[in-house]
Length: 272
Image (tube, rainbow, N blue to C red; front, side, top):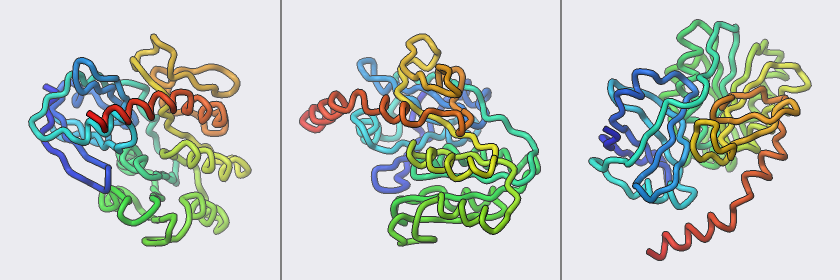
């Protein structure tokens, strides 16, 4: 159980892991996540399930902190101490009409199973994926297979349209395309930008939030966010929330609470 069966490098500092977790695989629905602990002394980190294959779950990890850097060094055959899940409420999947799925950076991985499910139930799916540059773009072929239309953006213009995913989304709206629903996953600032694009047009928009999280069961309260003026726990009330109700400023402030500690942890990890 929890053994790494396959490891791939998708992009610089972005790894894909296939992990043997048959009990989790049987219960997983799009939008859910797991909490992973590498070793007995390790911290717990939430990772969205990007796909399932027979008795394995697929996780995509971007090496941004000490624990994700550590996970990036693990090889096939390593057995993770804990993989707990599936956690969180699954994304609500229904036939809505025209659905736009927006994935930015590492957020392309968790938007994939949602896109696939939306397509399978009969929606027309338009996907927009973006990255800083072509070498950082992931899951292009996967997204193409589950989308009626696929648009790609890169910040530096090295591939697809030069600009941001919101530029492409704005373009679709300006063309007069009838959009019934938007789902966006990516950096918080990107999801905030998507929310501001769709807000004036009253397009139902959901985002998947991934704030500071510890136990993933609603006991610690670390993952609290403010939605519609009320406190919600992402791990049990989410991770999906109405984008037009999320207090993104508070969310971004909370994500920076432990920056100094995270930097010190990374410094010690690199040293040892």
